[in-house]
Length: 65
Image (cartoon, rainbow, N blue to C red; front, side, top):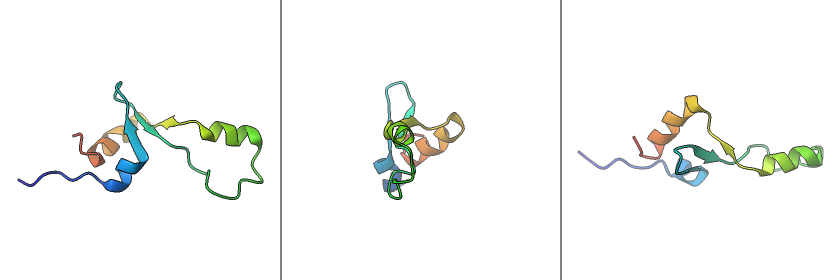
């Protein structure tokens, strides 16, 4: 049986923490930021975690399953 390959796009976007949670970046941070409030941009800077319902799918893409 051949080796499982990691989805390279997923490997660049997600990191798995020791707790098993998957860290991800926030969306809506690339352009057209002038109309956003400073508060919203500040909050989008922080990392988020993948929802539990999607975690299994992301782990599969990362070759962890």
